[in-house]
Image 1 (cartoon, rainbow, N blue to C red):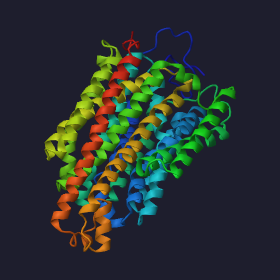
Image 2: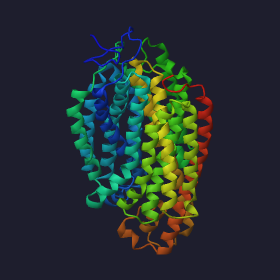
Image 3: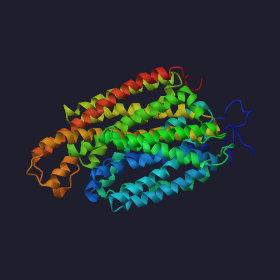
Image 4: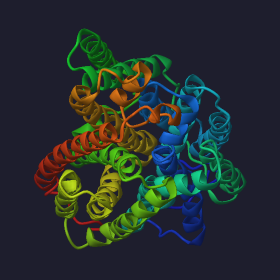
Length: 519
């Protein structure tokens, strides 16, 4: 089939070898990017939409503390576990086709979540959303690599794409707060339905189709091995964060390592591997993945704890808490759009390192809420945190995608998205569990023996307390609980600051040889 240098055709293959200068994208491609921004924004929203809805959800469904964590992070874990599979599947069957299938499935799972009548049902629906979301993320990013072959245009398009995802994460609490002001928590999931409908209408009109010309058969054994490697590893890390290095956690991590070794061994033997391990030989590719993973771990955990702090400690309504978080998101928009422009003149590694250093300062500001309570430090801290997030999301993703050839863009995109989704989920699990452990360890000594058992158990688990139990808890104990929670937030933010500052140094060293974009 004939096609131009961009690879834009009804079913495109590799760009023609005779095209020495990549064609610049036109209005059709930029309109197509707007279509791809829809599911990207939606997935970002869905990652954080429940942060402010969790207290209302907890009062309605009464989940245990373990169920509450699973409700929050099963979505990210399922996406992380299936992204490689779906990225490779999109290369084989068609990236636009997989995008539309995933969009329809995401709408159905959202409706199921909105109607959930128990914690178990909601966990299942969130898992289904994760499966559907795994089809959307690599498809959107891989299609951008097909539509924008000019390096500078592609970097700008990826910057916009990454900004939409990060913006969705940032405004998720605000949107959730606005919905909760007028509707029940289930309305947060119904937001996906009009977005999915618009995607299904516009995608066939504005997006090209792409299949890898060397797709071959779909290796189901590699699919099984990848899931067996990722999911036990994630479960083990979650268990370590919550209970320490106990036998169950060590067993899960060991199982994950064994299957990881088996997966790697199989990929090296296949003529057309499920995941091309040679991509990791590219220094920029590997370093960018580490930056994305670590950066999102810190953001995911800090956002969960900060939104709970605004509601459960300061007593703000969901809408008010979301509105206070919204201004900080503007710095992420600025960073996502301007970082690729700066990287045309300054090497990307130094742009990333400087942004991460500012982000570390933001975490240090957030850590001071234990000493200076109020919304000011939260807003100021997150403005700097989001500045770093927007930069690494845009430039980190561009470095990953640029390192891969066109026929492997789906798999490379899947790796980029996997580490980001895994980072957010691990942030919720690790930093959330760290704060919970500190809270439980310090609050128990303050619970009076005369307190009814159900009320004692509720406040011992956290600040999500049903109104029927709240009347039995004295105000002095509630104030101590708020102070204890704030201490856990400060410790988690301090740990994040140290990790991000270390990451800034590593980024400057590992990416210092990467040329400016377009050189």
